[in-house]
Image: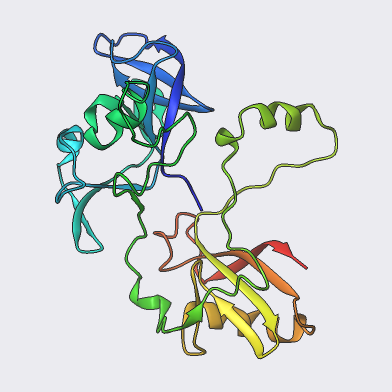
Length: 267
């Protein structure tokens, strides 16, 4: 499961040329733009990853997000701000860093955790606080062209894992080892929608990122038919996972004229 909001430590603070009010903040392998003087190296913060839906209403909302309450989106019945990568003064800002003091539900567990008589369960660097802060991963509305996405059941984790590939910026020290290794190659992550197909005991199981889907006229089953995946996956446990791109999917950034499927894992 992706950690959208975590306790982190600031690893760098860098001036931005020509900017009087903002500076670049380093967290893990990410760079964020923050107000000048908000942090110094070694400070703890809450780091929110790109694609986080930040709640702007209700008990889990925070005044810390009030400056983001412009053109909010409705997601799961709530008003939210969705974090996206932005370019500010030539610097790509990927995520958001905010002081822990902005979140009362975290203060005793991080800032005051060593205070005598404080029985709150302590939180350390790297711990996931997404649920505590009501942060969810934003999923854009389903385009009508994707068809009838009626669920058939839960994702079949007894056969395969969900497609939660870790971002390289989160690997920090591991990334240094990867760069030093000789036998590896980089590939491009296409901006589409995840599909997993596996041969189960009961037959072929076709899935979106989180659910198995009933056989119907939808984009996932269209890809199964287009690439004859039913014939490819013959034995129980055999699977293929990849990304569907094209019209109706994430705005079709590659300007494809028809939907295509690109595999990144199979067995």
